[in-house]
Length: 101
Image (cartoon, rainbow, N blue to C red; front, side, top):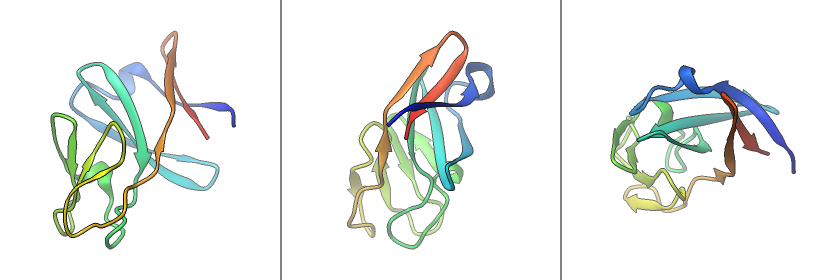
């Protein structure tokens, strides 16, 4: 696996999310208090776009049916989803946000 630039730090303000495409995958980049996290942007329940979900602390709620996921790990925090979403390694190099895919 290699790191790929997906955004610049100013592109993802604290408390926000941004959708990016990498190698045919749609990913969601979250900025929680200046720390960046990257998950698959597709809810494992019915495919909702997590980037459009409500973020509260380290939790994102799918806008379709309310499934909740931990932004740090992709783990399910609340139904109806039963499977975690993929979580990716992320690093900041200068002002570049890079993801490991």
